[in-house]
Length: 153
Image (cartoon, rainbow, N blue to C red; front, side, top):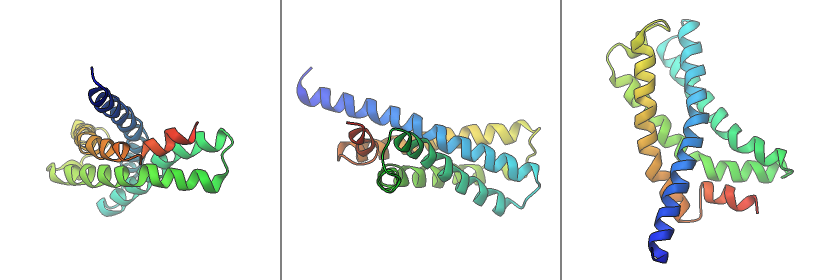
């Protein structure tokens, strides 16, 4: 394998790992937000906003927490987290919410309905597929999770 192939493979691998990391935080926020909004019988709009806010909160938290825990000053860790996470979380949230809204009845399904959980799983899968090339693009340019990984050195 030549240097260019190795670089492409390692960038793709890092992007995949970053996207799994991203999906974990964003997914936790989505499940808590949409599940909580549904359980509390909030309106669909409020439930979507709650899911988005919590997706950003948990998405940022899974990056910010370890950086601060490792001794990085909060202001620097916040800047790195913002640079590493904002674009992919935004991409994921747009795709995730468009898919959920496009599935008939998904927003009106209850927590006991298979449709609720299936639509959430499908929307997160589509969001992963959309975020992967975004993360790869960012990493290839030394941005996104590349900034975060560089900060550990």
